[in-house]
Length: 445
Image (tube, rainbow, N blue to C red; front, side, top):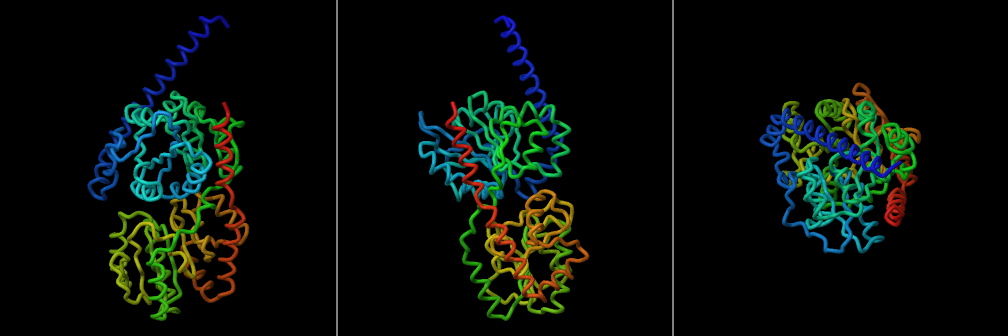
């Protein structure tokens, strides 16, 4: 092809890319404008999205310790708490393998930000900017990352395009395409193919996720299966509250203990009705109830009062007996450790159609675990555990019966928990495999 023709082709490609970026940014701005009342309500009512607002608009925080002139950078993006926990081991492994590199971590949610600052130090953590060029560019210019690592499926077109334009290599790790997201991605795969073309490496959780990534536009030679990083998350150090609760429950003759975690709207009433059934046969039973979202703590406290169930908020508990009562966990970061107290755990978002939440935390403790019928967001994990009889799936109607059945059968309940722990151990190793792939990618010219 003559030089002039090549030049014209590049110019046309640049023009198409610019137009695509312009219309995408216009659509994003329009969407934010239309939804502005919702964001303002969330900020006013629940205080969400207020923190880090300037950072999200592209203002670098003064606490950020910027890299030296010749200091290579790895930028890891993890949306919320779950992703921060998942990449924590990977970050440590990359620090060990790449000691010359500075590693920065960005998050989207406030809870993820708080955990990331605690884990990785404030000087290395910031809020992910909105996907506008004016917000993204200041971070890319300041950090000039050699490698961008994105956890799961955060496909932001402007960010990816601008990162690649600055010669950053982009990898998506722990990648998964949920049942709920897949139809939506497929509808836009023509546009997604161009966005995903910026990604040099996709490290999928399962072969099913790898197939779906290719279906929506990822190039097959760039996709690998390395497993789920969340299986490698170590058990958290138990906070003092765990032993305090254990002693209090034992001293008062309480038990059995049900820990219901990550519950969502519509579930708490079902779980509390089931707990009332349990109390008939086990008057000393204790429920630890942990709503998924902090802004719902007051709502659930009101529900407990309305149902006349004796309860206490964790933030106000001073050691009083909890026999026959519900402890409302209105704090952040303690649930994973508190599963250790459970005779039976229930993982929420699954009795109502919300896609479910991760069952790994109770499984790590070897606790008999129940979920509802709606586990689409964690289909592969739940299917794995179900195939090994390491989890029980229940509907709202059968929940009280299954709880009573397991509480009456110590051997079966303990065997269910033991199978869960064994399943967990069989899946370890994704962190090392992921780090191997990233290290090889960095070494390629």
